[in-house]
Length: 376
Ligand SMILES: Cc1cc2nc3c(=O)[nH]c(=O)nc-3n(C[C@H](O)[C@H](O)[C@H](O)COP(=O)(O)OP(=O)(O)OC[C@H]3O[C@@H](n4cnc5c(N)ncnc54)[C@H](O)[C@@H]3O)c2cc1C
Image 1 (cartoon, protein in one colour):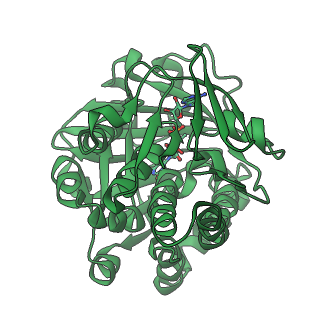
Image 2 (cartoon, helix red, strand yellow):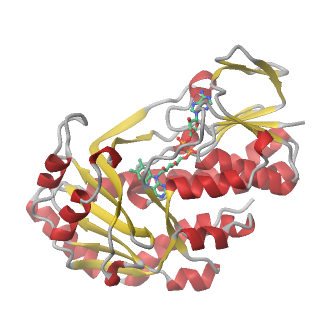
Image 3 (spheres, helix red, strand yellow):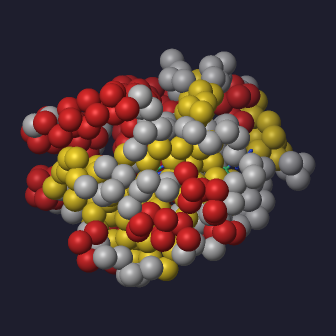
């Protein structure tokens, strides 16, 4: 019996690896002709890195990325408001958080899979929940399937065909991301920095020596189209000069634009022998840097369940083990996005003051909820 995974994003690839580790046969189908990641970075928190430790990939990811030991939130001029040292979690969980280029990560995951298990240029057009399951692809192929994992992203075709809750919530925030070759000032080398302003914010981290990933988010930018570098820079006029320099140093064609959205939490991820995983199940706004981390946790737990139980029971156990945490992330991230983008100057002052005085132990407890791996 082979498990069919639809979508070879970070979630689908990690699921394939976790199944491989358990000796469970799978086929992975991806619509794209080649696996290509957005040219941006990603932060892999302690929960994701614990999974990669179990899958034998931690060292490679640490070597090709940049372990981060501190996260800080600052004012637009990069004056610190609050920060969190990650050594507590490193000691507790035995792994570091790592900032890495998305394409480097996807390359590592793909490399670890047998070539013949990944079927590219296979766009799923229909899944039919009869016994046996049928999968139809845009090239006309029709396959029988024992079980299906929809790891096909926020607009998941599997979810839309089989499940009935499909509300995408738009935040009204626009996000630009880029990677640039730039010598990171040494004081920022091992940290993720996010500068919060009024209705906007800018974050950056080194993802490899001399390579910096940045993201800029604004609620004050109507529409996604028509933005060139100058216009993006002008939105961050009142920020530290480093912010504008990083944008300026990035070739315009390498800047990616997204409208931030999530999936309104849905009541089930499972129907018989079909289940959802990653963004397909619980797409979140990126404010906690946990979307992919949650997909990676899903992958690990789902493989554990498939190792322990028959498919239908495994899918239900997976949902039971994962749903509460994944949806907590969606809700907290949504709220954090609202707080980060406050526009009223008095509320911004109050926010900054509150963040400054919140005891470190409280921040640590909240992060611990994210970094503690789900269990079956
Ligand atoms: C601005 C931004 C910053 C972020 N930063 C972070 C971060 O720092 N840390 C973090 O953990 N997360 C972050 N995230 C979230 C993270 O990118 C996503 O949660 C993660 O990539 C989801 O992975 P996935 O595999 O579930 O879905 P996707 O990456 O969307 O992959 C879905 C795959 O399915 C394929 N597919 C779709 N339809 C079909 C079909 N019909 N047939 C076959 N294949 C199909 C697609 O081509 C795609 O390859 C960020 C997101 C954004 C927008």
